[in-house]
Amino acid sequence: MPHQSEAIQQAAQALALARANRRTIPPVSTSHGIASLDAAYAVAEVNTRARLESGRRVVGLKVGLTSKAVQQQLGVDQPDFGVLFDDMEFLNGQDVPTTRLMQPKVEAEIAFVVGRDVTGSAPSYSEFLTCLSYALPAIEIVDSAITDWKITLVDTVADNASSGLYVLGDQPLPIGALSLGALGMQMDKNGQTVSIGSGAACLGHPLRAAFWLARTMAARGQGLRQGQVILSGALGPMVPVAAGDLVQASVGALGSVSCRFI
Image 1 (cartoon, rainbow, N blue to C red):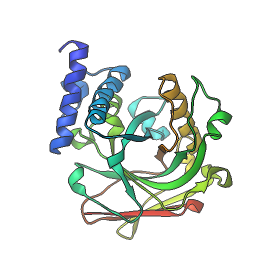
Image 2 (spheres, helix red, strand yellow):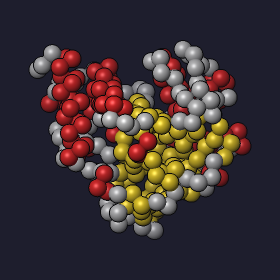
Image 3 (cartoon, helix red, strand yellow):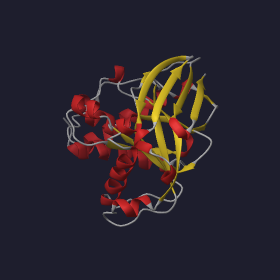
Image 4 (spheres, one colour):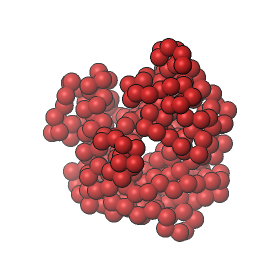
């Protein structure tokens, strides 16, 4: 295997090319010897810097692995995170081009909008809450560059937490007016219910998942910025989609959000 720093660069290049060409690749954990979580985040950071240098902007972050069942499956005890760029965002009812994706799946989630910067090395829960303005229903479109989704933890982290695109609902609501953990979720594909869940499926409570993200980013010296969106994690099972599919998700009092894949 190459030296670790060389392996990180090569793994990042392989993932970037896979996404650019829409051709999946074997797991970088085996092909490039990316073995640790730190190395995986270093791979993702290489590609984040490259996207920023190409003119993209970071507009938010996503939390992954918020399901206890998925954590047990991958042998981890905490979530992971990925970066959301400005060209990933779609709004309720818009068409989503599958030409930008390889093997997409959808998850219904609760998105939060940061109202002011989350600063400090270790914000408290109350400090964090005062920095959030709104919640929205969202559909996250996850997508893996790894063939057949045969991923380990380090593979998904290196691949920007398997981030693809996301769709936001129309009407933001203040977070204090909602019982987010009790919200029920139903997601339909082409009129058939394909996923059912609740806010409690997201690390026990969606705000806990978002708080984990805030603390994690603060510890990395990055923080959260005003106007950024946080995708807090899946409320139920993810479902594969393809061109022609209409996806509609209803998240309790937050309302609904939909998109069609073309």
